Image 1: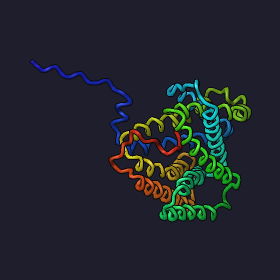
Image 2: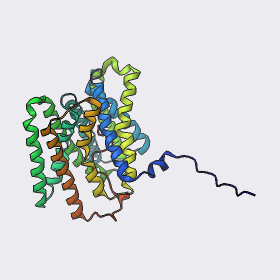
Image 3: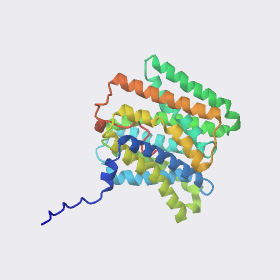
Image 4: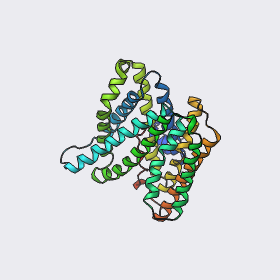
Length: 315
């Protein structure tokens, strides 16, 4: 008499994701974010960047509100000032970087934007080694300057302003995290971002926003830029040290450059690739050395850590 076989567990997407090594989860999340940016840029011929940003933020806000279900009662005036400021920074960060995407290569825009959080990390440190990372990032800026004549100056300006907005977003994110639990603050800020972007997004989008095909592409951008990376990053952080996560996130400019090449056909020059490499090394080095000073080791509990505040809603 044969032994009855043990019933197989039903397939679960969550279990499938958890079976993947955390490094690969982060890498897929990075590619997803930048692919979402590439898809968004492809929409610019039929839908203005501001309208794409609005659709993108709307998708994120709906997702986050459904998941977080934020409680609005018993909030102080200070709480609302912080979270509204956070939402405005979120909207401006996305609006400015999408304006940059419309004018200069994806990889260059993301590289310049990445100088914002890198500056926050370096300026907030008193370690001598960070002078090396600052110098390396500066070298990358010089390399970009050598090629700036072939790029739209307005696109470069928008990317610089996006870097400033990202820096402000990081600072407001820390304050929001102290006042709101879980992702409730981020959910409220996302709704604020949708409201802030609605006038210009709806006005510029006009009747095109009623086209179900364009709405579907906007949903795809939201899923690629928010749902996929947010889920994968949170899963990965439960099983990897924060310092490793931070170093991997430094690959964002390279991923953007590769997506720009494959999806958009954007070719970078040798000097531009050199600039991207400088910023990646500077960011990874700054992240690794600062984590070492904090004592983040392999035994660190990734479950209690938060990702660097790029945020699932960005791009």
